[in-house]
Image 1: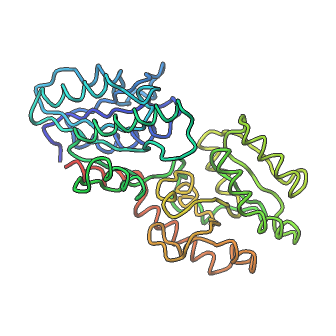
Image 2 (image 1 turned 120 degrees about the vertical axis):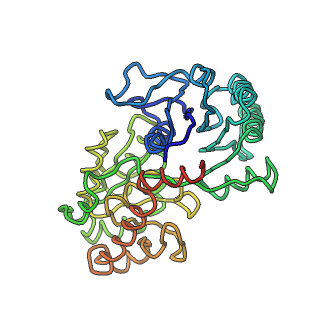
Amino acid sequence: MITDRHLVVIAPTAPPNICGVSDYAYLTAQRLATHYQSTTIGVKDVPTVINGADSMPVRYWLDALTTPSPLPTDVLLHFTPTSYAWTGLPLNLVRALQRFRRQNSQNRVFVFFHELWSDSLKLRIHQIARNRLARWSAYQVGKLADGITTLTSGQQDGLHQLLGSQTDVRLGLVGANIEPIEREIGFQSDRQSGVWALFGLSHTRLWAMQAHQPLLQSLFAQGKLKQITAIGPIDTAFAAEEAAFAASTFGPGKLIQLGTLEPAEVSQQLLTVEAAIIKQDADSLRKSGSFAALAAHAVPVICDVTEKLDSPPGQAIFRPHEVTANPGLLINDEGLHRRRQLHDWFWSTRSWSMIGNDMQRWMA
């Protein structure tokens, strides 16, 4: 059903510019657009080229937010502490949202907090200052909101402490930044025995390899593991450390760093690897797009989380000690059953269609 309302989705940028938060905003906006008279993407950094002739309008956020409309408008703000001001204090945005609320009593603001301020005790002086500004900004936009969503229970607790325990803060869903061209292809593709993947940012890849060092060393020694393929940025200090760690721990040539690939190329890699290793806890799995991509491609995921986890289903994940004891678990009937569980969990809850439906119910 199409409502008599307009929608403005505010994000850091839009495709083809690369940004995880912005990709999320754009992909979900495509689903939400079917329920509105019009949908506009308002961004801080406007791409020089807009994808496709049928793309939604993309404008500078202030222009999108202040264009007069005879109909009431919903604003969906995708917020991270420094998305709209490097200081963490986007005063122009806060003031524009305040004016937007005053323009029409039926205008609404929904805020999706993708990241919050840091509570680390190891911050430098300038980081502490920016942290305080980011927290103040989050408070201001949170108080303006008709609805608030975040991604983890830790973030949910932080917002309750900031805005009050009575504030309704819901948990949103994270989809896959890479999806296969066909839903079932992950069970039909030829997978290379002994080739595993590390997929994501360089620091997370390094930490995963370090965390699973005993497992990897054991399987390399047995000949069950032949190569680790790293997919993601390699122009960082962490990537150099990753390469050095692998060479000294497992031997030369055991780690292949492919760098940042196009989505179709990443998908092809995920359809050919035997398994993938990640280092996440139960909370961070909720917001991991790379983990969701592995599930979408039916890749066996090795991660040290409890099997009692509900979402994603912990019983569908392979724990390191299980694979150490029985490497064949990855490919036997039990392994196939786990892959199917994780795959079905993704497509029934985390596809972009499902996420779009979830957001539409939130904003209805």
